[in-house]
Length: 502
Image (cartoon, rainbow, N blue to C red; front, side, top):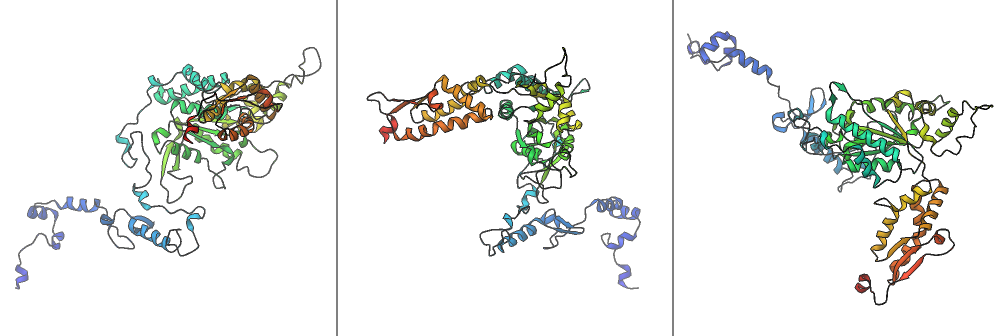
């Protein structure tokens, strides 16, 4: 017999696998069944396709194809080399081709995919890479929600008139954030109070929403419905409105999910009549927004305006996002008049057909039937339960807009001239003349600034040249182009600091 037959038994050799588990446990003191289970649970080692390093050294691999992965360093090195050869538009570029300026092509630092780039934060300021379920989401304190009368009082400081619109918005916002704070009340689920706001151009629809969001200190995203198209077509997809809100919230998911989205020009989404073509920017967008308005999980890119394979994304739930839609709805007054004049006929009880021709606030009589006639689908209208209209601005309201709000237009110009140590005043007749010109242009409050800018141009050009001017008074004759402004010279011996410095 050879010495090999009498060798000493070594339990660490591979032949031990042929022995029964009971014998191994008796000899080695280990349970072979647990070792096999550990080996089965252990994830197999993966190797980088380029540098052949294992994943426990180079980190998680980027899957390029089944069975093939590339580490972060090799992928970044590849992009850097592409930039050196003129594909990235860097300083060492030797080619005229600049891929960074080509549409739909973007080169990022792949560290963003592993938490080194723009991060999404939760309400605690921590990255969502950590387990969010370990931290309870903070709820809005119902005791700190501003009541409707205080919301309206704050809006009154910045917005003139529109009392009914401000009252509706105050109550709707108050009920919405009570819903966010409580979730349910005695197992009764409270529905969202999305709003649809109608009104002529320049009546303050956008300004109302912007002021409301600033007073409540919540993130606000204002978007234009004219750029929205159905998925797969050129234009912004519907999820882009949520992406803008996430950016306004500083990539804070919890704060984003309690914000406000204002979609302006919503009337441009009306169904096209008498057309056989696919309505990709009208009815299709209305249908795509149904789940968004009601509440759904939306996947949006982080730090980018469009989805891309190289851009990280996050999920936003729109259940607690307040949607406010606004639009001028041109020709809606004709639809309302046609409905109201259905009973006009000859006889003692008949209404006159021109009864509503001079009604400036006829939009306040709008109904769901009128909106359907205009081209809004019933499912879309049903998800905007609060419908109201702003008032048409008259001359007195325009005069109040000029002088009463905290940031009134004439206060802005007075501040500009105050920096040149010149006092600016407007006569009452001048304010009414400006208001009448704005009414003639039919631009609402937007026309006020353009009119004042026209008459203030020469004054603001000449004042810096003459240090003797101490006060300027804008008269009604100057606005009517029948005379000039009153210019008062400084008192004798009075020298401005600016003149002394010169």
